[in-house]
Amino acid sequence: MDQELFQNVKTFLEKEKGCSNVESEVPIKEKSQDQFEGLKVVRGIRTAPKDFGHIDIVGGKFYRKMPEDPRYIGIQLHCIEYKSPNDDIIKGIGQIFWYKFAMSKLYIWVEQLFLYLMIHEDNFSEDLKEFCECFGIGLLQANAAKIITEVVTPENQHGLLARLVQDNAKVKCPPCQKTFAPQELNCPNCGKALETSFIGYVWEFADTFGSSSTNPRYKGVPHAMPEEVEITPMLKKVFGNWSKVKATWET
Image (cartoon, rainbow, N blue to C red):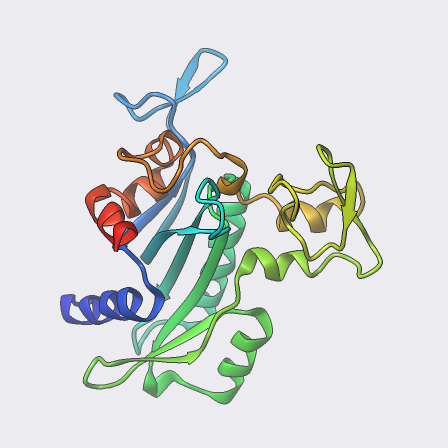
């Protein structure tokens, strides 16, 4: 992707999606516990963190999940897979689902995840549009002048996956001992993550993204980068310019 097209995508994410930070070639890697050597430490043995690949462009922002209570902070990510006119669109779709799986497997600390496929207008088809709509994937289109158009608006993949749980099922909040419908990911009373014991493979994907809202340590965005962001390569790459995070938050 050339620099002009990247800048247009960056502008789109900042203006249309409110992202404070936008980065390219963002790695999806395991968390590192050794900040000086970039190694993962398991049972005293240091190994290189597993690498699941790179996402072409990621925009992110911190947001107030509960405006009335500034303790509950969430992270929103917009991940874009770009395919040039000569690239395989089917491969791009596969990569998008792979990113979702990898982020879920690694317990990435994010509450709202939006995935996009970006193509050139010559590669557009109604079938592709229909497919993206069915799976909640965003579809971005670039014309000859490299202007970005949002053809399909994505759905929050976290919430989309949660809806796969059976309609008659219930989930439980351990602290409150109350049950709620499966579309709820966090307890409306205390904000804690809800739990369930049935159809494990479905709910595992619905609730494996780490939840920042369950950690009330920060009132508003903290002055320095949170430790969870610091040790997560993907989030550290996106929010490396912490001054932009604070500036956006304050305005």
